[in-house]
Length: 154
Image 1: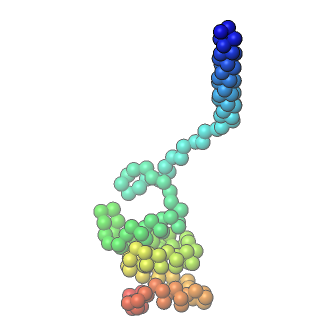
Image 2 (image 1 turned 180 degrees about the horizontal axis):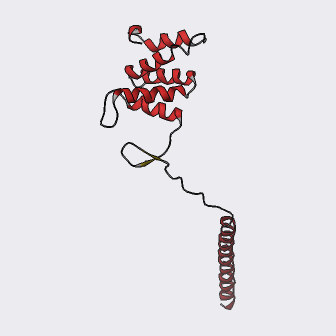
Image 3 (image 1 turned 120 degrees about the vertical axis):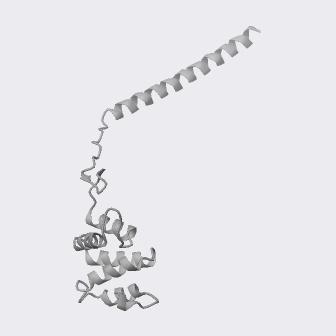
């Protein structure tokens, strides 16, 4: 009977040692994490630098970002904040700062995926003088016109 209790006591001690060693592993890993976190640095938050037409703080967009966002969100119609001429001028100004091949790809994307003829034709008309002599120019206008072959609109 004594041997049975002694054996159970030894097993109990072994389980406690294992539990203590696993707890020490957890503590060591927490210490390691704390040591690693010591070298992490916090980045400064990004602060808006522009004021939009609504009078709120906003971020400055790159020329390509502005061209894409304007092309995909406008029907070239007057709105509360902008007239048609202001929208067109903003598109042309952003397109001036971008690569003509990027503008051509955007015009095709706007025409095919967003089904927006007015913006794609505006960009196609803008590219007319810039595409001269390029190998991709004729293919671009063929694809831009689409099935209905609306070359007079461009």
